[in-house]
Length: 290
Image 1 (tube, rainbow, N blue to C red):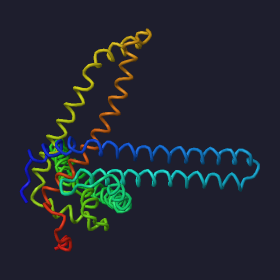
Image 2 (image 1 turned 120 degrees about the vertical axis):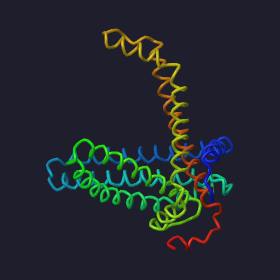
Image 3 (image 1 turned 30 degrees about the horizontal axis):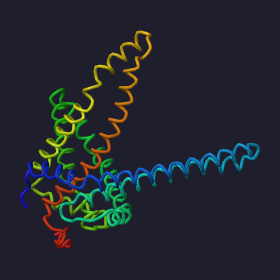
Image 4 (image 1 turned 180 degrees about the vertical axis):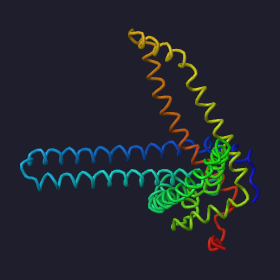
C-alpha cells in the first residue's frame, strides 16, 4: 500500500488526541507497576544486606550473598525490560487505527507481547554486535584512504542505520496488533511490509522528530532565561534566586510531561505506520517469508 508522509504525521497526532485519556492512563498504570516492583526489590535487597551483615564471619554466607546480589540485579533488569515491552505493546494496541480496544484488552496484549518483544530486542542486539563488528572492520579499512575514506564510511554508517530503523519501525505493532509471537517472524514481517517504503517512513520520522523538538523548545522557552541566570549566579558564588528554583521545579515537571507525551506519541506513530503499510490485520501472515 502507498505510504503518505503527511498522513502518517497527521494521523499520529489525531490518534493521540482522540485516545489521549486511555493512552495516558495506561502509561501511568505501567509506571506504577514499575515503581511497586522497584520498591519490593529494594526491600528484598535491604533484607539481604541485613542478613549478610549479620553473617560476616561466615565466608559461605557472604559468598551466597554476592551470588544473590548478582541474581537480583539480573532479575531487576529482566523484569524492567519485560514491563517496558508490555507497556509499549499496550500503547501500540491502543493507538492502532486498525482497532478500537479498551484498557483491559490492551493490558492483556501487553502481557502476551512482553516475551516476544524481549526476544526481538535480544535478536536485534546480537545483530547489532555482529553487524557493528563487520562495519567497523570495513570502515577501518576505509580510514586508510584518509579523510575522504573516513567521511564516506561515516555517511555510509548513518545511511545504513537510518535504513534499518525505517525497515524495522513497525516490529512493536506487528506483535501487539497482529498477534505475531515468534520474534523472527515479527522481524521478517516488518521487513516485508516496509519494502520499498523506507524513504517515506524516514521522512515522516524526520518531520515527527522535528515537531517534537519544536514543542519541547516551546515548553522550555519560558524558563530558559531564568535557568541561565541561576546558573551564572551559582557559578559566581551567589545563592540561587527563588524564581530560579521555581524554574527548576517547572523544568523537572516539564521534562516528565514531555517524556510521557513522547512515549505515547511514539507508540501512535509506529501504529499509524503499521496501519498504512499493512491496511488490514486479516492479511495472511504465512506469506511473511514468501
